[in-house]
Image (cartoon, rainbow, N blue to C red):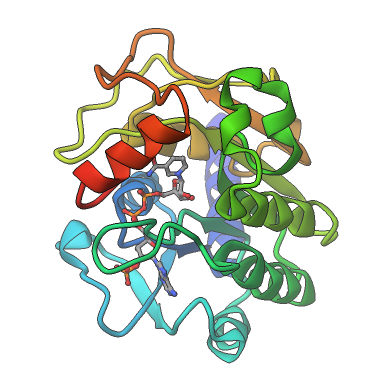
Length: 260
Ligand SMILES: NC(=O)c1ccc[n+]([C@@H]2O[C@H](COP(=O)([O-])OP(=O)(O)OC[C@H]3O[C@@H](n4cnc5c(N)ncnc54)[C@H](OP(=O)(O)O)[C@@H]3O)[C@@H](O)[C@H]2O)c1
């Protein structure tokens, strides 16, 4: 009897897995995104990475994924990616590089514009969960951090706040993971000690590997639906001091060619 039940259960779960189009990951070629993709693939998920035609795929070399080609700022290519399959979940680990590498210090509405497209098409195609990697201090969250008052008015943090709001109001079940600082390359190994907290006053350092694990903790997890979390790792601290004020911040930007 027992082997029969196990066989039926295996058949049932395999059917569910095969029936959904898997997971669509935005920013999957990036530093955080690639860690998320690798864990998803290792756990047997069918993963589609939304990437630009010229995105560097080195971090995913040898990893079995499909690619949906487009630009996140092009609504039509996002619509096409969501039309191609019925995804169970979508994950956004993209980032508009601030400063350095020819960029500006502003996100120029990247997060709001891209979330508008992603959330619209996720809702339209019945995606069951959207996991967003966001930032501590985004939107109104900055009000809880008097030590960072000098960052108030940052258009990037405002942009990220509007993206969160769009997702929360989209009708797609969501999980928002806000993080504080993540390290420069080379990326350190995960500690395995990170966790998600609903305490929105947490500002912590965190490895991308740990953030990837926390992403899988949210995936399909009913207890994590429609919540905003701050990631915390009591065992990891970067040796770079936090900026103390606007002048300190300006000096750092001028010193550092590519802020991470
Ligand atoms: N860095 C930090 O200190 C920090 C702090 C808090 C939160 N975060 C958040 O953490 C997440 C990941 O950051 P990260 O530093 O790991 O990212 P990253 O390494 O800079 O990777 C960014 C990813 O986004 C993709 N992307 C950017 N613009 C795109 C576009 N127009 N179309 C398609 N793809 C596009 C990039 O693709 P290409 O290869 O084509 O450029 C790349 O795959 C982001 O949500 C970020 O805001 C970062």
